[in-house]
Length: 599
Image (cartoon, rainbow, N blue to C red):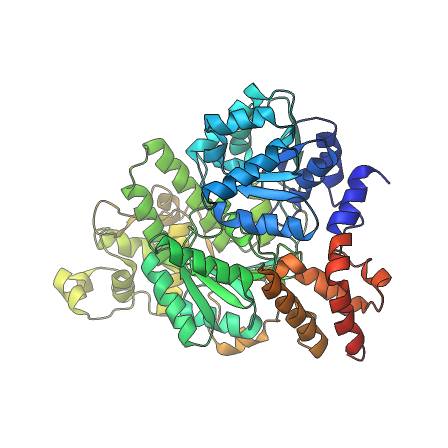
């Protein structure tokens, strides 16, 4: 058996590489540089961990995720790998001991933050050690146009300059073509072989729903499909994070807040609980999540619109890293669009940067409003052609209906124009429905030609019409005034009768519709055996002081549940059970399996 495959089997417990893993591993073992674009959950870590063990010396992994290094190293140690990390969480004595092991050649892998790597002292230490390879994780952080730019990443080209003979591998799960070019240029990877895997995450079900009391919609989704599951709920503001977490907690959910405004110790405690307990829901701003290694996140829900397709893809990608079914659920409304556009306009970025951010937001709005397959749209954004319907998104499972909205659109646009292009949606709808409100009377809008002409549609339908007109670029928010809606140049052909428009039908907002959805939880059922396996895993995890998934992933437990091995030899064939874990945990899990053989 080739050394790389032998390491994969004996250490990590997998019988074969997936996708392009083998080609990447062989290229790196042979001394070549590589740029790897692979979706979250695609097995990027195997691509550098196996070569680091096979090659002579230590693999240096550069990662910005200080808070997660310990869990990554714990997982490797559980598998029998000689791994350590160096970051600011260690005491001086602890760091000195790790540096000693590095110099003596006692490590297979060492995780280090880019800030520490760049210090002259550490670079000199590396020159005295035998290095197998450099792995630059989260490589998109090098892009100044990206959503996770880290200034220290720009300096990592020094690795190529000071260690030209040592192979390097840069890895990321989110990089469009411009970002990819920037990674190559800034890291000196012009000669590197590029491995671009499919961005598709077939186990994730994508859903977008129109916001109508978002918290209640979220609760209905969680109660119907994810009771007892771990997940992440993203909100735009710190205030909304705290209020939503408290509200969910009051409803009986183990929900915790996470945002940059909390003190460091609170953030650390909440992250530890999320990683080490089961069934915890983290309510967070985007300050939480980059590089989260928790494989059993069963859902990612957005209560507010993300800022871009890249952000949406990366955040939803934190669900289902173990390959088991997971959900990406998004609720959005016109208010989200207005808020984000105000944030872009009010920012201090250059006009060029603002224009780019507007385009990214427009692409996400198009995704939300489209009637096409969500997966196809998402992959197309990253330059990947997806044929046919995926069968695992809301538009495929429950195809939306459309209607000819040309006349209604003209009414909406005319109303915005004739009231002075300075009022928001609520007032415009009042005018269209002919409501005699104090504001209508104050401005004399009962005298306009559009007063009362829209009574054929409900308030909810008009809200959908205005939202879709803004998303399609026919209306824009006046950022210099009071947030009123004004017409764009694109609206002229529609008003003149030179073009038409079709709208999505607003869904019926009934509880019955929520109850029809099928549960997509990863568990093979909440039977006694499944619960017993999870309880044994949690017991062992607490004894070891590690997260449960470090013992075994849900996918490994699921295979145990399905295969029911009765001997150590049979258990050894379960995916994810390497030699060290078989020796360490095999008897305990076999006892559970044999005692509950009837289930």
